Amino acid sequence: MELEPGEASFEASKGKKHCMYRVPWCLRGRGNDNDFRPQLVSIGPYHSADPRLRDMQFHKDRMLDCILKRTGKDISEFYDAIKDLEHEARACYEDLPETSFPSEDFMKMLVLDGCFMLEFLVGCYERSHYSELGYVKKDPIFSKLYMCYGILMDMILIENQIPLFILNQIYEVQFGDTHNDKVTDLMFEAFNPFWVIGRVPKSENGEKLILSSSKLEVTGRNMPSSCLEAFWQNLMYDCTTPEPLVAAAYGHLDFAWRRSLSRRGVARQHMETPTAPENKENAENEENEENAENEENEENAEPERKRIGDEPMIIIDLEQHVIRSVMALKEAGVIFKHKNTPFFWDVKFDLKSGVLEVPQIMIAEWSKSMFLNFMAFELCHIEEENQKILSYILFMDSLVNSAADVDELRACGAIVSTDHEILLGTSR
Image (cartoon, rainbow, N blue to C red):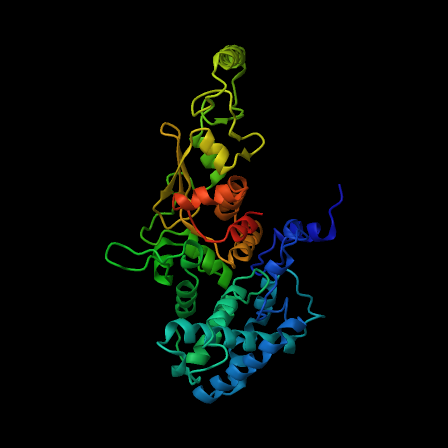
């Protein structure tokens, strides 16, 4: 079987230590192309030649001029800070032929984009007001909320990244701070759970429950390699405990289905368990007896009452990975409740009570693009057993098929959205 060029490239990249990826072939060509393209600003080499983004180049140059005037630094100091890291930075990118991006152009791009990113994030999050950096009150970037939101969303696109170790070196020159953790903490502050759940989770004493570089060090986890990975970590990791987060064994929804749903409940599990040869005949006899019992129950069952614990209604078929919609589950007796947790992917089903607990999620105009880029990142960079967002998206895609499904989830507090089309579009 021959692989298509894009598919072959994706498969070959798995063995390499890239952290700046192209969109996987399996997510392309589905009407989602614009969700992976920056709308305002290019960061890194992949979209640097996009003519739609040329207007922002003016603002990159403007901010660099402001930095040089404010700090009294010469542009050569920025190049000197990263010149020994060019080869390492190039190696981060999955698809970057040196012939199409010469050394001089590559280094200029890293300095210009890096300075822009840091100036923007510091102006928005670290300083009390961007005017402290020398910008006027009606600055065409900082003063416009829609521009700030758009730039932030462009910064988390999988094809719109530069390595954080480059940003660390630029930050040291730009702000005179030698603590490399500053950039990581800035990323965690900017890209926090608010963008997904509609709020910043807080502890009982009011402390924000977001990651920091010090918390990552305590737990022994790796520092993020990119802005997108910092956002992903902020959503995945429990910053209140040094233990790896396994949310009641429901971290990966495929495992959740297998552990939570029994053969005689709302799912019919088709799981093959290794059987010793001497016990194989007994196992087959037991299965035949169980099948006969199920057939008898089906004959005696009341067709108008298909509820939890009643055969033969299959709401979730694990063999086919099929989950029914919200309204179909509700008709079968499943009760939807909001689960109070900052981890939106931590879905829990209780077989005895028939309660499906779904954490709150906010659906906004940026949600579709954000989740697609998370999916791409997990497919490229994250081990299968930790692809929580991908599992969650597949789960929700099955749940939501109509406006009635949206209304039911909103009624129980599982989603925050006022637009059916936005949510249904995200589900698709």
